Image (cartoon, helix red, strand yellow):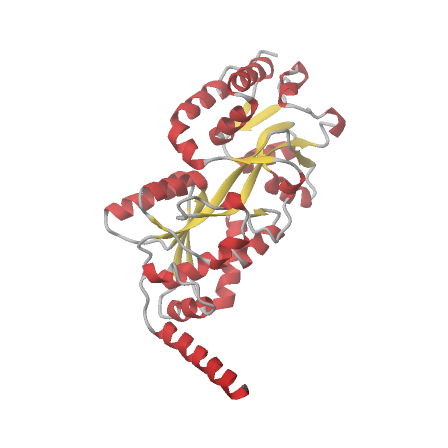
Length: 348
C-alpha cells in the first residue's frame, strides 16, 4: 500500500509538472481548477514579463497588495493609476487599436460593468469564489467584487456632539443644520440607491427640502471631504467612505463616522482582460486579490468581500448598489443629482 501511495503521489507530481510545462490557452486557464492551480499559474508566469494592473484604487491600499504579491512570487507588477472615468475609455480605445496592454483592471463596479458590456473582460472560475459574500459575485462572472465601500456620514467631534446627530435622513431637514452639511460632487450612484430605498417620491422631495433649508457644500473627492470634516470646515458630511474616516481617526483627527438607515454600499472589484498579454500572471494576481489580498485590505480598515474577515457591515442591514441599473439609468439620475446639489444655498 505504501509503495502504491508513493507511486500515485509521484504520478501526481509528474502530471502537475507536465501541466505546468504545456502552454495553456486563456480559455483553458480560466476554467482550470486542479489542486496544482497555483503551481501551474506560477510556472507559466515565470515565462512572462510580469503583469500590468490598471487601477483607480488609492495607492495606499493597492501598494501593500502589490508588494506582498511581488515578494511572494517574484513577479513584477506595473501599476497604472487613474480615475474610473479614465480607466474605461483607455481600455476601450486600446481594444479598438488592437493594442492589448492591461492584464487586470481593479476599479468601481460601474466601470467594470461597462467593460463587461464592451466584451473586454474574461470570466474566471477561480476556486476562491466560494469564499466570497454573495454580493461580490456578478451573474456573468466577468468581474468580481474585491471590496465594499460603505457610504457613511462623518462629523467633526469638536463641533458636533454624538447625542445631537441626526437619527434619520428626515432629521437633516431641520434648520439647525444650516451651513453645516457637505456632500461629494459625483455621488450620483449613492443618490440613486438612497432615493430608491427611501421611496422615489419622498426621497427626492426630502433632498430638495434639505438643500432649500440648509444648503450643501459640494466638494470634489471623498478624501477632500474627509479632510474638510477633520479640519472643521465641513462639520457634517453626508457621503464619505467609512474606511477613510477610520484612517484619519487613527492618526488622531477629530472625526467619526456613522450611518443612517437604509445604509448603502458600493462594490469595487477586479476583472481579467479577455486578451491579457500575460494570462498566467494575470490569473495568479486575480487569485491573490481574492485570497491573501483580502486580509491586507482588512488590515487597512477597508471592507473585504471574503467572508473570513470581519466587516462593519455585519452590524446593520445594508444595500449594495447595482452597477448595471446605474449604467442604464445613470444619465437621468446624474442630471437630477447635479440639479439638486447645485441649487443655491439659503442666505444666512
